[in-house]
Amino acid sequence: MDWSLVLSGGGAKGLAYIGMFKALEELEYPRPDCIVGCSMGAIIGGLYASGMTVDEMISFFSNDFELTDYLDVSHLGFGLTKLTKLLQIGASLNNLISHQGADSGEKSLTLFKKLSCYQTFDQLKIPFYCNAVDLCDGNEIVFDKGRVADAMRASSSYPGFFTPFHHNGRIFVDGCVKNNTPVWIAKAKGFKNILAVTLGTFKIITSEDLDSSISVLTRCMEVASIRSDYTIANTPTHILDIDTGMAPHDFSDPLSQIQMGYSVTMNHKKELLDFFQKGFPGIVNRRRMSKKIARRLKHEKVF
Image 1 (tube, rainbow, N blue to C red):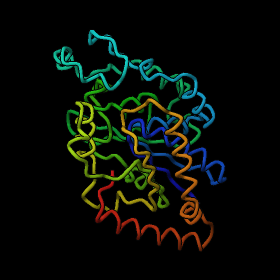
Image 2 (image 1 turned 120 degrees about the horizontal axis):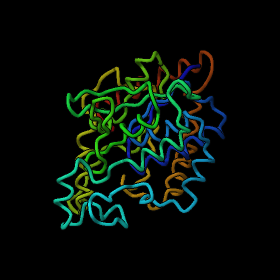
Image 3 (image 1 turned 120 degrees about the vertical axis):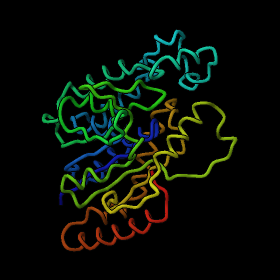
Image 4 (image 1 turned 135 degrees about the vertical axis):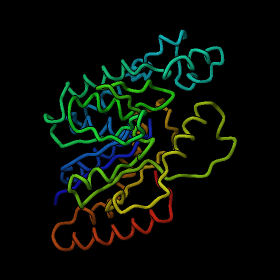
């Protein structure tokens, strides 16, 4: 069967997608015929679509990975030792206000170009699409042409952290602002069998959880991105939820995130077997799963 994989955004939690891909390969399921991603889902999904292997991704995050090596905050006038300090330094508030984002995104873009081998969409091993939001007109935009690294940079331009991506006369921010799990893109491309992978459902938290400006900002984005309006166009066949329990800005232990993605995927082998089953039994399974997911999305906030 033809099927599409849709990957939600979620910051550092999205590293779990690497473990998910590892599990799907070990279970010998067919590779997706299409990958759709938002934010970190666009980054990991785009790299996989470009031909970067799971082992290469794991190796990259194993070799003394330091997030700060790929950030550019020189224009702010202070050094960055930990991401969690980025928006907590009161003396730099004026610098943050005077720029469109705390990080220019240039180092990230350079990294995306290198890891994707400078490929364009028409060179990819697997068809890939991602979303971003035009900050001027407010519309959700689908990237499906040009350089893949540009699309990754646009889709992951998290407001406040990264400067919006200026591209072809437009200004783009993270796709999660409008739709963190853009299933509708896969449907618009003609796919009926769609596996969406999310990184946690919306949960009520306490005031003690909002202990920093970063936690407030990320929570605001979570609130903004939840989907409370059910639509058939944005309803997948099945949802695999990989909730690592980590904060979106916590890149301190990438391998742990990857391992959790692997473990959670393996723990859902039965549902995946139903989704990938061939023939008429598979058609029946996927219809049943679709109805179950539709009922869930009518009553649950998923982002």
